[in-house]
Length: 146
Image (tube, rainbow, N blue to C red; front, side, top):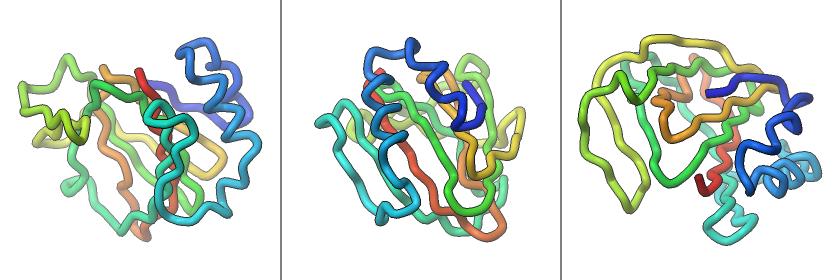
């Protein structure tokens, strides 16, 4: 898992062969102007999801992991709290291959705040509980083939 500011996003370009194209898209797009929905930047290899979340408390934020995709998550309006637990510390749970997600019961081990101007990167080994917020948040979730 990585937590940093968007100013430093280019420093992570070498972590995945698709990161250069992803970072180029993020740098050259007015993310705040994007409407809710999905943009396929490079077929199913790079997908940008724009969503508006509802208010959510920690107890309602399920931990999740993905096998096929890396997530880059960027809050645009307001802050959100995210939970993190290493996938190695999570119990066995059923994987939904169609949606590329495994959900887990219980709370995360750690929580942190992500504000506009920041991002997180979650790899397949990173259990995460996103979108914990009192007011809801507009955010970008980029799905990048792992």
